[in-house]
Amino acid sequence: MLDRKMIRKDPGRVREGLKKKGVNFDLDAFLEMDEEMRSLIREGEQLKHEKNKVSQDVAKLKKEGKDASEIIERMKTVSDRIKEIDEQIKDISTRLDELALKIPNIPHDSVPLGTSSEENVVVRKWGEFKELPFEPLPHWEIAEKLGILDLAAGSTLSGRGFVVYRNDGALLTRALINFMLDVHREQGYEELWVPYVVTRDCMIGTAQLPKLEDDMYHIEKDDLFLIPTAEVPLTNMNRGKVLDGEALPVKYTAFSPCFRREAGSYGQDTKGLIRIHQFNKVEMVDFSLPEVSYDELETLLNDATEVLERLEIPYRVIELCTGDLSFGASKCYDIETYAPAVDKWLEVSSCSNFEDFQARRANIRFRRKKGEKSEFVHTLNGSGIALPRLIATILENNQTPTGKVRIPRALVSYMGGKEYLEA
Image 1 (cartoon, rainbow, N blue to C red):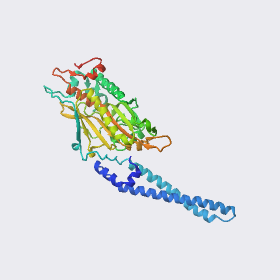
Image 2: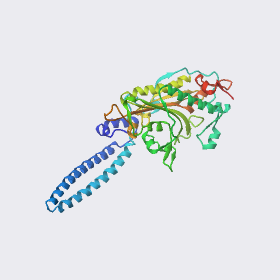
Image 3: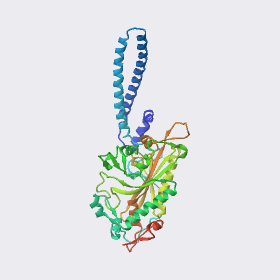
Image 4: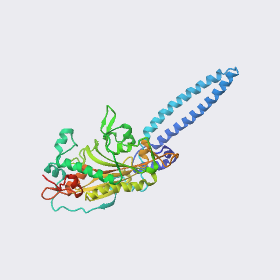
């Protein structure tokens, strides 16, 4: 969430940020409520001070044998008002906290202005996109011919939007996960294995809630959520902690399945692996000093693209415009690969800097030196990489006229020496 003091001091900056993200939020009502609460706090403090002073006067009068009944009666009225004020403050504070969770993060000044994905900016490309000398098949047809993907079984087991990988499809999935985790460990990330269900507080901490609750799988009995990404448990590993500033950046990586209901997405890219409800992903999370977090964002981006370069997969990097940023991000890059048969650029990674937005929600701080005041860290995260669209890209770009699919050289050892997927 945003710093409450900053909102009070510089509401114009917040209004501009809301406008850039295209978010409708009644900031005036929020500020009026905030001022009402602060006014009540001042009144309550004055009355409590008066009550403490009068209590001393009453004790003195009683000691002197004088009548203090009139003062005592007046203080009952003051005590009732203090109680009333405390209840009002509690109520307003709760409402303010609820509203504060609905205010999005402010875009960084370097983010290009725009209202939709059409105004995103291509910042770089890598690799050559080779035209196949034959009519390419879409990845789901390739996979079913090879016997490595069973869409019908996924639907039978769990419903629409779930898939089953079979034989070398399962092996390819495991190979990619192990390969990516090994790459990220080389890059300096600590590997973790995390729970796949988290508390409501964790989801609020990383800003999935309250905004995206309809897209989440919720276990109502326990009020737990299936994770939409390993970002949630990885970031919340340090919830409520004060980190050693000299040890920053702290970097975590983890594999996890990811669960997203994708509410409202039916009919959009539902064929094959492009949009499914459960998918595998390796995630990277970075806890950074504020003054270097944008340098860390570039490092995070390079760590993600290194995976694709080692896999010999051409890609492009997109800088998202203000109107296409997520609720919590200050700046974000998307990494996209091209699938020739479906003729689409597929997003396989997003790398974001949240600045202190998540850290305030999850209360993650650092201390530069012993005895100094703690500060909020900056948090960053990036996919390294999401598997379904990566697999789709590998199948469509590496298919051969004979129906076999070439396995990227970096994966051959992870595939037990196999160089091709074949029926």
